Amino acid sequence: MTSPYLCPSCKTNRTRFNILEQKATSVKIDPRSGEIVTEYTNDTLDAFHTPYRGPERRIQCAACGLIEDEQMFVRHAESNRLQ
Image (cartoon, rainbow, N blue to C red):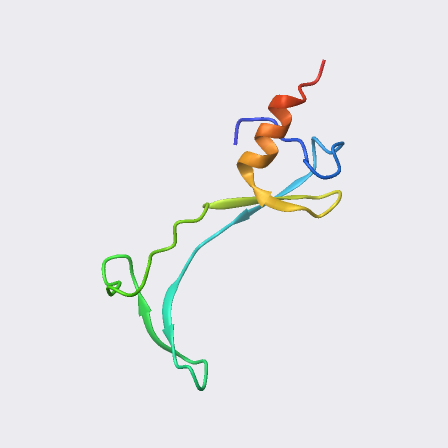
C-alpha cells in the first residue's frame, strides 16, 4: 500500500480508509442443516470446487462507506492527482 487513494464515490476523501483483509475458507456444507461437512485446503480441493480467485484486500472509504477493490481507489487517485 504505497499508492495514494481517492474515493471514487464521495471524491473528496484522500486520507481516511479501512483496509479489509480477506481470508477465504473453502468448505462443503450440509444442504439441510448448513453445518460444515468438509473444510478444504488448496491442495485438497475436489474437481467441483473452484478455489477463491478474488482480491486479498478491499478498501472501505471511512467517509462515505464505499467498499471496492484497492485498484479502484488507486486509479481514481492517479486520474485526479493533487496539484
